[in-house]
Image (cartoon, rainbow, N blue to C red; front, top):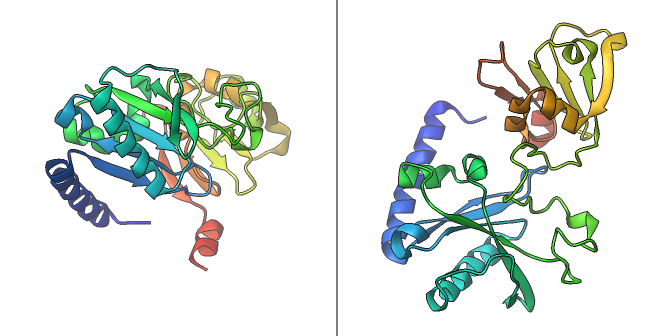
Length: 257
C-alpha cells in the first residue's frame, strides 16, 4: 500500500499532467485500471473548460479505445453541440451504436476526483458513453448479455444503491445489526461474499443472512464501500468516523507473488 508521501507525489505529477494536456490538447483523459472487482474506466478533464462540452466517462473497455471514443465524441459535439440523450449514435464504436446518459451529480464524487480538483467544484456537466453488447442490446434492454451487466454501471440512476451486485444478493450480517447496532466492520471476501458486521460478536449463532439492498436501507453509508475489492476489509470506530480500508494479508501476499 502506498505511503501518504507516495500518494502526494503521484497526485502532484497527475495534476501537472492534467494542466499540460488541457493546454495542449483541450482535455486530459484519466484512466483507472480494472482491479479485479471494479471495471476499468476513463474520464475526461477539461472538455467543459475548453469547449463548453460535458465531461465524458466510459467503463469496461481498454484504455486506447476509450480515449479514441472521447475524441470521436468531441468531433461529434463540434458538429452537433447539443447532445441527444438516450439516442443511439450509429457506427460510433467499431460499427456499433453508443448512447449518452447524463451522470447524476450524486455519483460525481465516486468517479470524477481529479475533475473536482481541476474545477475546484462539482459544477460541471458530465455524460456517460454507454456501449451495447454484440447483439446491439444496451444494458437496460431486456436481451442485454447478462455476463456483461456489471462491466459498466449506469450513472444516471440508483445513487441509493451503488453496488455492482443485484439488490437481492444474499449477504451476511448479525442479529445485533438488525436490532439496531451500527455496522462497523465490512468484509468483501475473496470468493465475493459480503459481511456487514457490528464488531461486537463472533458467535455463529448471531449471524443472519439478508439482501444487500436491506443492508443499504439499514445504513446508506455502506454505499461508500461499493468499490471495496475482493479480499479487502473496511472498518470504523463509530458511524461518525470515516471508513478505513485494508487488503487482507493473504490477498496481499498472493498479489505480490
